Amino acid sequence: MHVIGFGLAALGVAIGLGMIGMGAMQGMARQPEAIGKLQTAMLIALAFVELVFLLTVFVALGSLKPFFPG
Image 1 (cartoon, rainbow, N blue to C red):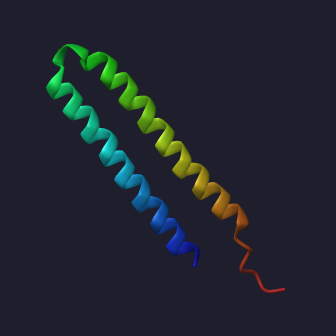
Image 2 (image 1 turned 120 degrees about the horizontal axis):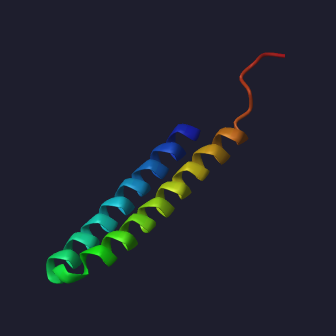
């Protein structure tokens, strides 16, 4: 069951990263003079989305019960 959760988290992150990149590219195409500001904002947003995924993975792994008999 946890594998499904990991897959959904990865899928959500992939969609989110794609949307962030798409929005940044559209903004850069419309206003080339603002590329520096857009890149900075895009990289910060990408970092936050990745952080949420990593936190999800670590919390999920911490909640798994060990598979050792006993």
